[in-house]
Image 1 (tube, rainbow, N blue to C red):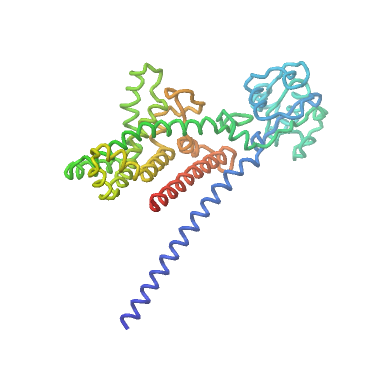
Image 2 (cartoon, rainbow, N blue to C red):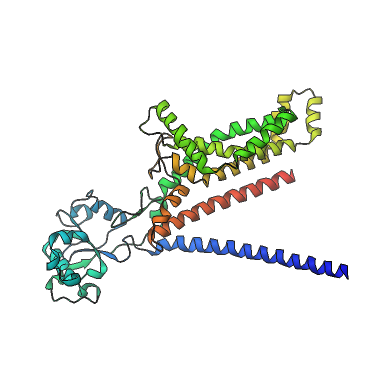
Length: 413
């Protein structure tokens, strides 16, 4: 009876564990599907914000404008229609809120019912105009809205065709200005470059230091010293990233600014130093474990053949543990790529293409953390941030696969 009850309990626990694993896998799958669904939805949106249109005079020869051209027009970098293949005429950018400075409220009617008519009049009177307007306030002859107007000015209004946001504009763009109007800029290259720039130099700093400490702990330190240092190093991994960021902002940033005589100390170099310290525990722990797993017979054989301790370390132990060391490096890169708060606090958070370590940069995780709370749910900015999350997910997946392949290689060796 007792055996039968024990078997029932065992099967019950097996079922619970199986159900738990299945639910966890399903939850992860749903999260991934949701992430990519929201992110890839960005490419179904026009470059002009939903609910708004660009209008020109009907005599204007320009029928299509791309994202870059729209931005340059409203930034006054393109000032003549001839630059876009149109007539030799100065461009007159017009935003919707300017209409309230032209007309007092009493002329716009109750609840602004005369707005469509006034908009039509303004565009009809200016053949060089390009107007950024809410779609609901256009005359009904243009969009078939519920507004009614008898103004003949509607004959002079034409909506400019604007393209959808494309993958090439997103992945190849060099400007990240998600709140710009009328055409937001979602160029991911500055964020991607900032992430890789900071992470790469963090690993270049952390790798020699971490490898040196791992060699010392594995081969040179006594048992007493190892028992002291190992917990201290592992404790570094448990310090919250915001503490590292606060330390970097208060101590490291002013020091960098003073030593290198920079206008500001919040630079990619500051971020690299902080990430290097944060990646050290991962690199040291994994590399040291890989070295200590080197068979004792290999060490003794090397020493018996007349090799010194240092020759044994760099000709026998390090080559044997190379797969584990490489796994430590890859995991250190993963730690650096995914870090958010510390980098956000010390890198200056400037979405610009980096040209040196001593310039302010912005990383992908820092961008998501800083902007997601301000992005309207379901909007293009919101979807662009989810697409940044997709990029981070792919990075993490590549890192995980790399570690798995390296581990299998080490086991087979």
